[in-house]
Image (cartoon, rainbow, N blue to C red):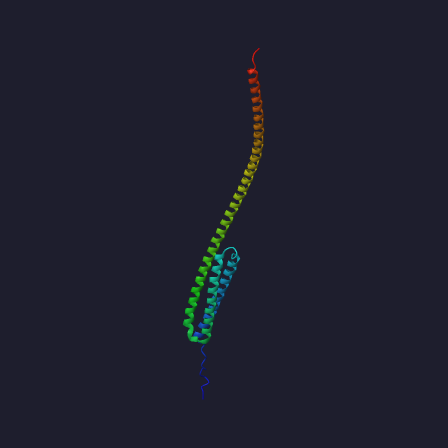
Length: 194
């Protein structure tokens, strides 16, 4: 017979299962944090995609890294469900996920800095284009003024040409009169004196 006063053995909740559960929650939290950070990065980079092609390349890289992180998280969950003894491996993979998160954060910071630089370069380019547009307008105005002066000079030249032609005609007429007068003088001088 069993001794009723003897305590019944209690089932011990394995510490490894508790650790694995905590690690699983930590992995999910890290995956959600990574997912949120990368989604925010994708939103911010997509706003400047039409202006800056370089930012699109950075977004594609981060999207690839996000997919790799999700695949790693899925592998971690499978390993946690299959084996309780894999706690040390999960811990190592969790550390890798943290490293990946730090790398993603660094890349996010770098992408944001690049986006700011590109935005500044775009603004400088737009300012330069505006200055060039103003210079072009000034040049057009100058060209129009020069064209007007050239047209005026052509008109004046045509008037002077006509006046020169009239003057030449007058000179020819005067020369003819002078020749006639000289001929008459010569005729008068040639007549014998009575």
